[in-house]
Length: 284
Image (cartoon, rainbow, N blue to C red; front, side, top):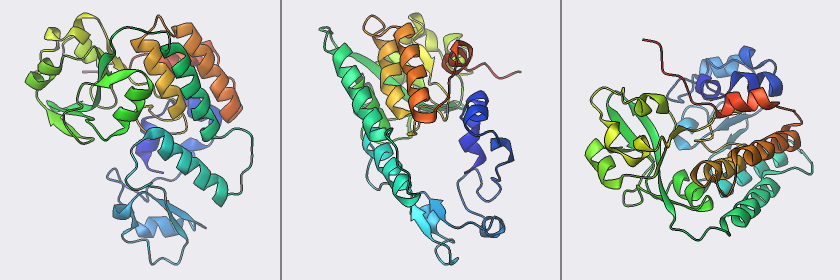
């Protein structure tokens, strides 16, 4: 676990699910997800999970069982998270009626149910990975964005570029002019909605005029990344992009029920509001 794992989560959610999360040691991995083997060995682990070959380097000869958590070549969020959930259940011999496979099935069924009543043109959306230092990076084709957007009845505005961290200009953004812009990391949506990003004019975009530039929620993790909350991401996208099909109140109920099934916790209206609220502008 790196400190970034907690940086993109809601601390109140973490308090409910992992009361001792603030005491979790994270010094063994840096912000680039590179492992400090000395710090890792100080933890005396029984098993080590790593994410891809770049993290494997330096830990393969420690004499500790290691398991790759990356599903190579897989970018569909449902397939990826189900495989990871099944892997953890197998390793730790966890049984239970609630699995991500079942939750994804329920999420997809609900999505198809509500989208089945829609007869209009699909709306376009852009998945902004980051917007920091004047550089905008987006998720193009062959990424998580495709799976999330397809399930939510959306078209990826960046479908003509391939990759998960593609740098684009404002001119390219003007050409795409997506109906909805969903922001993962970096500069919060509020800065773009207030047109306060230096060197960038967001006022020319339809999403600016319609106030449909939105931060992705942060709960057990940011919903912009694949995680155990991912089945909720599809339904949240529908509630924002097609609110006439799935209202905010309906989504909140689905959110609450999900956490009761998956984690055995009650969130309450105030905490749900905190999760779904926009990120704040950084203090100057």
